Length: 118
Image 1 (cartoon, rainbow, N blue to C red):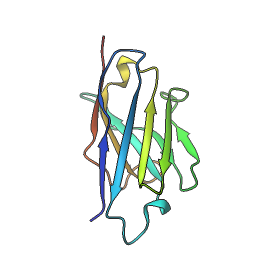
Image 2: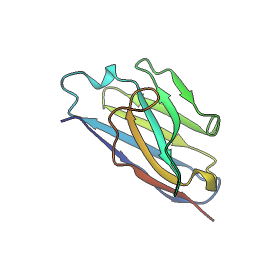
Image 3: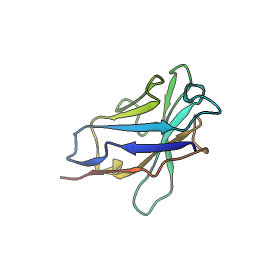
Image 4: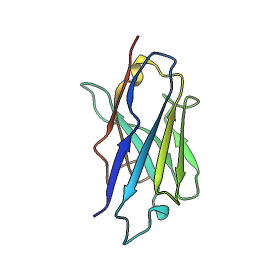
């Protein structure tokens, strides 16, 4: 069974950093390396917001809201996708999910909570 598990969330002050990880397992029918992957987030009381995607070759795209502050990367040998969050703002507070597909819409994990507060 294909599965995605996010980790690395936590509580930080504005300006702080976190590194999220998304570990994939069970991708036996089609290898993890063949999937584009993405991160989306859901702030409290709001809908899902796509924030970043990475294709099979490592090419990355970002939403304007996080461009220049967040960096997506992947390690296909370990079947992990990372999201480095720098210069965090209170508006970044949300549950963060990774998923298959460059803009989401596929398999998604259960998420990891990021809270930015002073």
